[in-house]
Image (cartoon, rainbow, N blue to C red; front, side, top):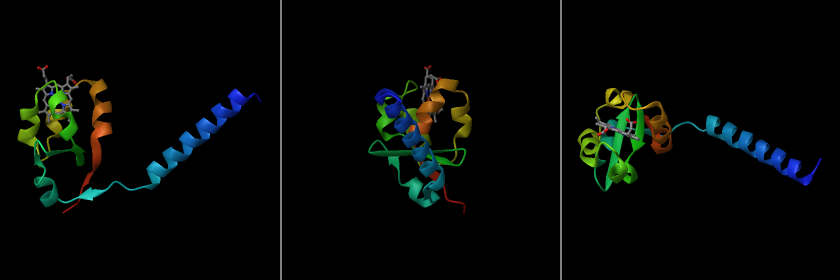
Length: 104
Ligand code: HEM
């Protein structure tokens, strides 16, 4: 096995391990009360489909504008608003996800 092939094997094993760790680690849970405190440009969280997204860093980059996100910040669930977005956009949500809504 060449050193390049060895590196590729190590890379694929590390990726697999990271994947396993991610699955094993449960999503952090946030209560509705805690989420409700994050509705300003300094800290803006959205709830959609039971997932919690921290969109603070994304506010100024959002093609639909910051205000529309601020209006939905802190809950309630705005999954309907996310549904019309393009399929490719879903990758951004994944990156912004910080946890899930704690069941009440
Ligand atoms: C994690 C949350 C969100 C992300 C990452 C996001 C991202 C994006 C992206 C990439 C686009 C452009 C292309 C597309 O349609 O996919 C877009 C457009 C848009 N988004 Fe969002 N969005 C989010 C949440 C929301 C919410 C909650 C609303 C509320 C209604 C919203 C309203 C809009 C509107 C109206 C447009 C169209 C803008 C235009 O074409 O003029 N978005 N968003």
